[in-house]
Amino acid sequence: MKADLHVHTMFSLDGKTTMEQLVETAKERGIGCIAVTDHNEFKAFELLKDNKDVIIIPAEEVSSKEGHIVALGIDRLIPRGRSIQETIDLIHEAGGYAIAAHPYRWWSGLGEKNTLSYPFDGIEARNGRSIPSANVKSEALAKRIGKPITAGSDAHVPKHIGEGYIEIPDTVTTWQEAVDAIMSGNVKESDSESRHMKGTLHYGFKSIFEWIFRGFKKM
Image 1 (cartoon, rainbow, N blue to C red):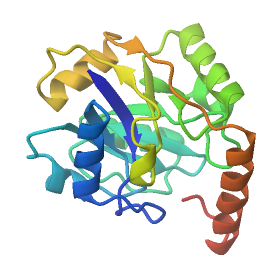
Image 2 (cartoon, rainbow, N blue to C red):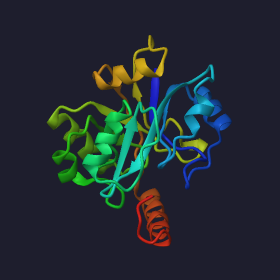
Image 3 (cartoon, rainbow, N blue to C red):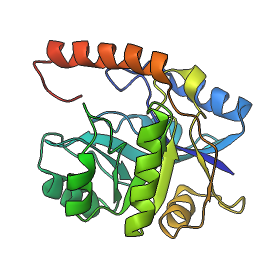
């Protein structure tokens, strides 16, 4: 089963995907499991959890002071703007796992030093919005320190859903089973797509402009 573990919806400030579009696009592309990782929001899960077509993992992309952290399998909203360690602790208190998101993305990633210095539960090894070299470094880092690997499209609009994923066992029927498979390493890596230079430059300029507009605060 294909599992895209990093997808945004209209509840992210920069997301446009509706609940209906998320489910329909996932069905069309053979994605059986999605982690909805809206920026500092946790509204989508309640609206999506009872759909009969796609397993939805409750999640969030949390803006810590030093960079983005994916909270996987949580039961509540994790507040933004805390230190890395405090964010990890809050994720664990919410029953979830702390994943270092796209660690080598310079404007929102944690960086290698922070990723190594704190007790993350896993590392996002492949991200559909990262350049190939960043994904290669992320995957190598995860394997070097023996952490579980996740992957996702980082889709903010429907057309990008499924451009990054891992494969979990087809026997998985609940989000809890999906998370257990991911964290136990019972997954198969895919040839997830990466963002190439033209897209990277466009995305980079857009992100920097939005960062300035926000008063130099992370998303």
